[in-house]
Amino acid sequence: MRVWVKEACTVTEKNRQLSGEWVLSLLRWGLLACVVVVAVLDPAERISTRVLVLFALAAGIFNAAITLLLYFRLYLRGLPVLTLVVDIVTILALLHLSGGTGGPYIIFVTFPLLIAALRFGWPAGLLTAGIFFLDGALLIAVSWEMEQARELIFQLGWYTLWLILVSVIVSVVSERVPPAEMTDRQAWETEARMVPEHLKMVYEMAASLSATLNYERVLEAILDISRLGFDELGMRLGQSVGLVLLYDDEGRLAPASYRNLVTRADENRRIRGNAGMVAEAISSGQAAIGDSAADDPELRAFDSLQSSKSIVCVPLRAGFETYGAVLFASVKAKAYTVEHLELLTLFCNQATIALQNASLYRSLRQERDKIVDKEEEARHKLARELHDGPTQDVAAIAMRLNFARLLLDRDPARARAELERLEDLAHHTVREIRSMLFALRPVVLETEGLLAALNMYAKNLQENDSIPVTIDAEDYQDCLDLEAQGVVFAILDEAMNNARKHAQASQIWVRLAVEEDLFVAKVRDNGQGFDVENVENSYGSRGSLGMVNLKERAELVGGTLSIDSVPGRGTSVTLLVPIAGKTS
Image (tube, rainbow, N blue to C red; front, side, top):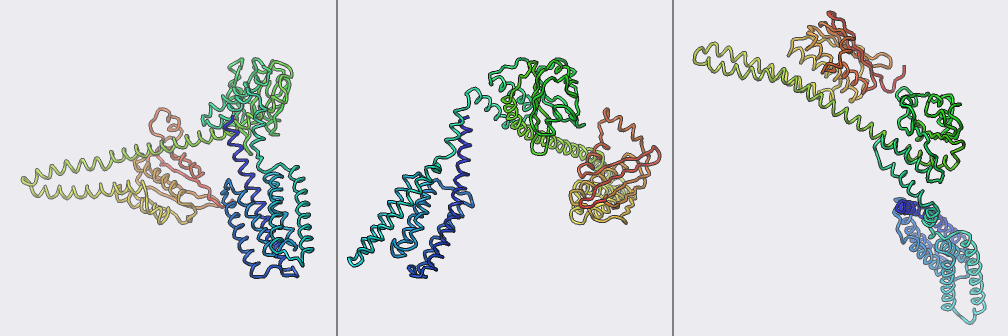
């Protein structure tokens, strides 16, 4: 708790000091402008133009440096003292340049006196006034002439009277406004001392919520800390029921964490949150205290709340996002007071932030696991394709090379023919490997786009497997970003590969088009087809999840994928992707 108070005080003090220095910096610019105006309008021309320019330039450079420090938030601990000293020296220099204390420039003495008193207390203001008095007396002593004795004495008296008047005003103001050096630290420490020691422990536990990224731990801590806080208020509530209700995928509120439920059935209860106390708290964003849950249109569904006579409910909300609500119910009538409401609201506000962080972290972990699974799937697919294709070909080449070597002495003519067949097999293997590498990362997709990549893929497929691929892109226009094109190409590649390997198709048709605000891609083949419903229902017992993977990839770009197939009549795969920036 002390560490937290100290850190909070440090941040608050620094922000306040920066704000104060910004105000003073702006005042200095205004003061400098006033000096220039007074000098220009001064009929006695006490300050020459050249001296005025040099003075304004020096003061401007100093204040510009201070302004830059504040702009970059480079606050120095000794900055208030430094600026006060420079302000005093600047005004003293102004008085000397104007010829003494008898001109209109003595009005600017008010600025450093006021700043000294407000920042360091009225003694600092009186000390600053003393400095100006001594300087004025010194100026008059240096320029003392008997012929002007009366005038100089009058001038000193007027200057002294002015300093006294300003000092009185400054002292009164500084008494009403606390010195700036009395920072918010004292207020924080005083407030911390006022908090009972047992509540400090509760607050530290609540603050520790923000340090955990475990979603379930946050939910458990919400109820544990809230109950502990209630007990520490001096009113032990006995066996009260605690519920953390969060929205599920269907938009209903379900118990995500709970305490003292009397039936297991309540763990699976779902409410809509459209009526009653929970709906009121969520819609208004304000905590609420109620009476019997048996009279609530939704809470009465919970058997564990039937005997409750007092309920408190607080929404879990962060910004415009609502996660659900926290609810406590007691068998005692009027068990919850405003203190309980405020304490629970405090915990829930902190818990919501922790819940948000934990939820984001869990989502990131899920996305990471998906990426890892996809990479693992890609490695397995590559391994299978290498094993079924190039690896078998390379093994065949090695065996047939050995056979050709034996034929060289016995039958050179057959050996020559065998070597020619081996050359064809080697070329076929190279083309197959290149085709696999192209499918893994089609560079042409990045340089020339989706259509060029598909044309090259179709050419490779026809050369390697003698399967003609017809691409219809008459209604296609380049409308997808590079990332979306990569996902679309991967889906079309998988669909054509399935037609080649599993459907035993002899012809493949690919159509690309743009229809209103949708990009449409369709892969059709004349293969043997399959029963789509039967394959989907058997995924639980199969190792391959090809159709699921295709649909998940389509979702990555916000699209949808449908598969239409009938045994003996071929297969059609249709991909629809919304085009960004277009409306129907």
